[in-house]
Image (cartoon, rainbow over all chains, first blue to last red; front, side):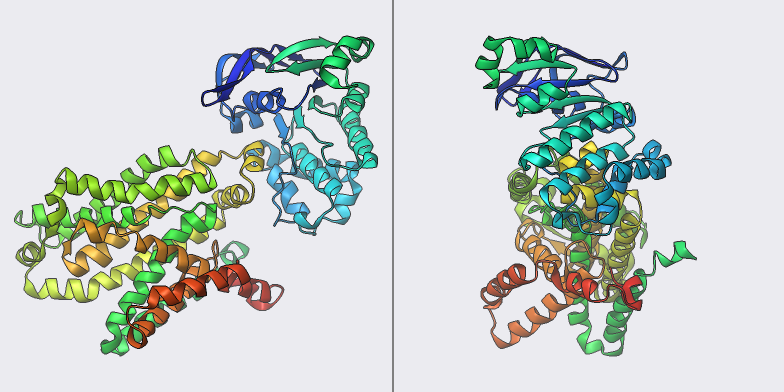
Length: 235
Length: 331
């Protein structure tokens, strides 16, 4: 579904990505692990096109989308849940979700997608008239995920969705992610610092450090390797 | 019917401008005050289209008014003997629009890549830089400016010129104000407005929603700048019939624009009118009571207002009328 080949990018004189290769297979959860500053978020923003690619390619659904503008990629079904709760704080929950259906194709499927989001997060249906900024942290995260689902995606990139949440909520978020794969049939590229939970949810794992991929494999393989766990994951 | 209702908020705007214009027509002695107030309202209305809707503060805004003024000045100065009559004024407005659009494209293409405070800092230099360019390279007579009253007189005749600069210039300012208000409402009621609202609240989130944030920022920036150019052509060029770079690029007009928008309520439709009237009237009376101290008195008032009422007069009003019959009219 998504293939990243020798991708290089960065900010000004500082290069962050040093040619990681990644493949995300359709209908799977692919997890990207690694310490702070490894370049995980930059990789996602580069795939989306918000950070410019300097070298390498991004292939999405067999198509070269390396230099495609972000909004065109959203049209192709590439969604992203950015790190931190990027909400439209002064809008209501409902308005936030509808903003997700901004593009024409997504707007055409607004009602069904809204229903799906409400069935996945019943609390959002109850709170739909509430201003998003007044929700709890966990609920705000649900809105950002719900809003990404409203863009009518096939692949959804999530950047630290469990960040700053209480342990119980972290579990709920991971359950939701698995549900999105199982019930909605989405492909997920998940960036996480919570290595333990992420290894449990993932089908395939990449370990990133200093802008390149240091290890990859099935979660079982990563879990079995003490070197990887010790060197990069702090487990 | 429902479609028409979405545009009801333009009614109080039109009523407000009609009342202001009517006051000036009924009391000719107050025409200068009315013209001044109309200038401030228009300045706010045009500036709000960018600042209010995107949340970006452009400290170089006066440059667009200045370049528009030059557009009109150049048309009259160079074309007065071509026998075009009043048509040179039309050409002046077209030039003003073209100049300000081009300048805003150039500035926008560079500065709109920056966000928030960085954008504000980048734009501070624009008008100063542009002024020094005109003075230093002696473009359009450099620091000597363009004095074109004689040219205008020769082109359209003495009588017409008098009416043009003492009456029609101000009426044209009103026209620019109404154009700015209508455009603001059209933006608000269409996709462009939702895009701008989203990017004002959270630009990263807007981007991942598939909103082409750069495109919409540039649309708002250029529209706002072009209106500024037309304002300059009417309120400065036609009214004064001279232009010096020192006046055309004076940064305090940008500061006044920011004050007006914040006083009235950034991103609201009525805000710039309310802000422009409050600011204009206050400045008028302060100039009588305590001449020379206006800015000294304004500074603490503005800080207080921004701290206590960040949403501005109309912002507060909007909340108060929520759920009442007035809701349809005030945004």
